[in-house]
Length: 104
Image (cartoon, rainbow, N blue to C red; front, side):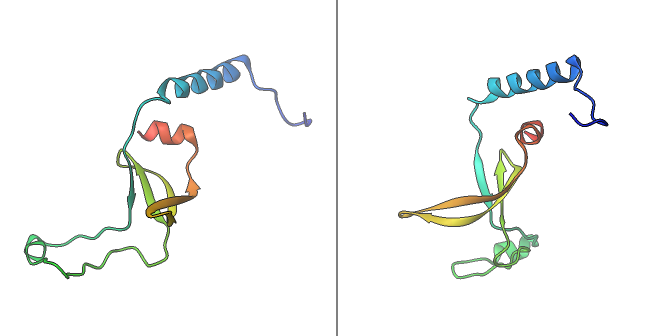
């Protein structure tokens, strides 16, 4: 241990252990994972005029990482990949587990 570092107190180590135990309790709870390509705002009149072939411009630029949400809360960014015949998502940035659970 470096000269200017201090050892964690019993209270700090026990609260870290309690945090890990809390995460283990939550591990089996199912959440809905969604990927958001982008978003935009439009007026109801414009929404009513949409039909097959309509194009709506999104606020996200082509090539930007996509938002990955768990129960509507952003937890990561990623990119679309093909997994056989299906789409998948490759995680490129992920928030740490404790922050993810706190936001849920």
